[in-house]
Amino acid sequence: MIVSIVRFEPEGVSPEEIKISFKSSAERFATMPGLIRKIGCYDAPQNSCTIIYLWESREAAERCFSESAGIEKFREHFRCLTEIDYHHVVTVVDGPAA
Image (cartoon, rainbow, N blue to C red):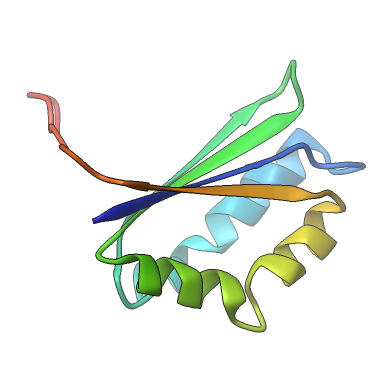
């Protein structure tokens, strides 16, 4: 498994627009091949976002970010540069609330 962590600081986008954008993309990602889980986070005081994706493979992650609706469209929508890091997953633990 691979985790990809996407970080960005949106420009000229309100917190409400960010929430709407995150929620509206849920359906598309729910059927994305190779995606196990997606978590979207927003820090209003810092105006920063982090999206954490858990993938079956790095190939699946790279396929997502290289598609025409991928990272370039994402950058255009949020008007900012985007940083993507990839890490091999060593362990995943679900707590009792899961």
